[in-house]
Length: 214
Image: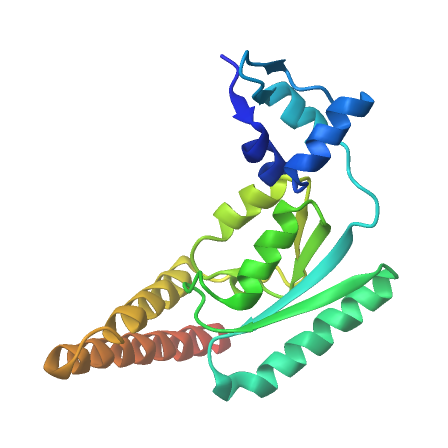
């Protein structure tokens, strides 16, 4: 069963104003699927797919770089330099959007700007150095949103981590966020758990390296 969108819903999805859609209706560029007796315009899923598959001109590539804290500013600069070097070698116009914040913080200014630009159909490709630089948790959701607007997400370094590494990093991020909301003894216990997880992962890493040498 086909879904129908009001003119305001449709305009937000495809990244144009409602007035632009009215103009398109008037000049024959895109008529609504149907108009109610009251004069309300509605658009169909098929029309949405049709519009989404027509890529507008001047879409650009955006390099997205992120670190977790202000203490990592040097790492952020190196990350930006690496992404810039990679994109300049491609010879395509690009912009860099950078963020400082946790990988599970969805309110970061840069991330919101990136998603807004994607939803306005302005972005051809998003390039990140590592998968977790985009988001620690939720990468697949952003990737799906990007796919709706024919936007590709490219990861420069696809070095795979072990499942244990990824699990520990996710747990550390989650516990860190919640520990910031706690006070007193509960906060200290949460912080202690984070340190234990990090230390355990470091010890496992050293053990794995020792086994490889052996």
